[in-house]
Length: 365
Ligand SMILES: Cc1ncc(COP(=O)(O)O)c(C=O)c1O
Image 1 (cartoon, rainbow, N blue to C red):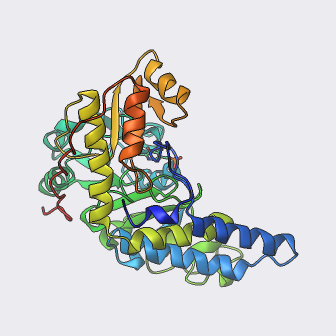
Image 2 (image 1 turned 30 degrees about the vertical axis):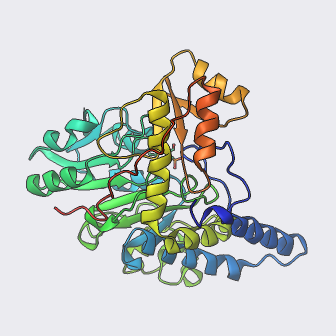
Image 3 (image 1 turned 90 degrees about the horizontal axis):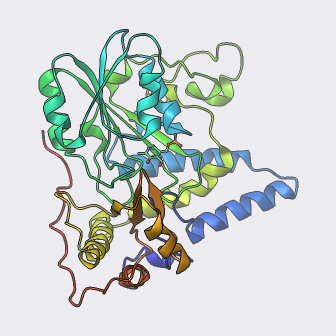
């Protein structure tokens, strides 16, 4: 069992980190203390502001990005809209079929001739052409749990002169990621990073950042937010902070300890645990193992029967796009897998399921 498990009070029969993560004990303590301070007439804005920077720094470490390339945000679609605002009229954006709407819709709804093209995830690298301005894809698919061939896509984009935008929302926290391999990444941290909702991060490489217009600039886009509160807000920050939006304070108070927990953790161990549990579950259900190990398992469940069976046994799972979906995270163990299999009327694997091959910690292009 992961050393992270002891930081969570819950987790038994909770197979839905892909929907929403659980708050760690430290997150609960931090938010309670913040609420108590506010309720007693002493809201601590300075502490919340420190939490924002602690969260930014921990996230930067987690995704191996220089902290100056990380902007704070709140929702994926809003971060993606910032990128979409800089896609030239008529340019092509390539996305996987069926990727999450917050990643795709901002391009589709820009309403100024952006040509959105989709390809099956497995063919995404091959689909990149010299006509492609941007490839936007989730590293791990929400509906299926499939892990993208990020190295292949990034390499194809470099060859074609296209930019890359990778959504890490379903990946960061269990899959080792290196944000610097993409021109930009987005992540809403309320799932696998167990933050409150409303804590998001955008990473942008400096050369790509220079081509983005800070269309969401406000008082937080200056070097010192407290001196850029009025009028046009004054000079923009020189680094990615110029894309900051003002933080959801309380959410960041809860996020800072969660992100520190995950940034300090041995991600290789978390990866092995999550993908090992998922592999055991697939063996029990007789499902094929995916080419790239995933912590998320999905299977056809058009009637919703499987999901109902799990719920009837007190197991929290989810259903998306006609598929049942379970997710295994650091607070889960073999017993969770076996209870879910029994709930589905399936025998549990007799033997231990061999650990998945170690993941490449970075993708070389
Ligand atoms: C890949 C992916 N990105 C983003 C989100 C969340 O989007 P938003 O931040 O717009 O709520 C989800 C939620 O399921 C997701 O699966």
